[in-house]
Image 1 (cartoon, helix red, strand yellow):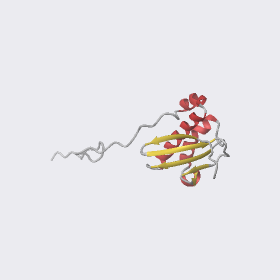
Image 2 (image 1 turned 180 degrees about the vertical axis):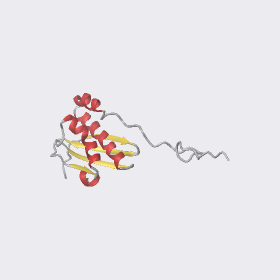
Image 3 (image 1 turned 30 degrees about the horizontal axis):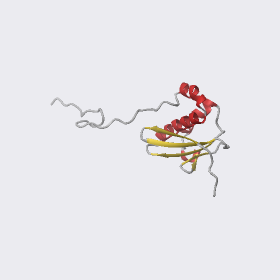
Image 4 (image 1 turned 60 degrees about the vertical axis):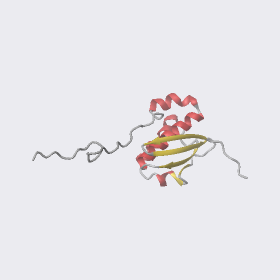
Length: 133
């Protein structure tokens, strides 16, 4: 039977995306998202830079093996969810990192979601064009 590795877990959400992030402290810097390598799943460099920010701010990039299960939303929303998940998992690993993560804004959940469509309007706020005659 395989021995289970110790890990720290954090859940991140952004728009309609949810990410479950696991940090394995005894790692070599391997990063897997939905059983695929990081750069294969997130192809845009902007998203990769965005989600790795908490690790760079704390100076811990390359110290953990990171495993992520992410679902829902689009690619940018998923990247934001992974970012929050990483920050929360780092906090469980070392609570002393809170001031650094808080200062960088990595612990704040971005609550912006798409506004629902209202009846009588074309979109959430766009009204039909007014015609005088």
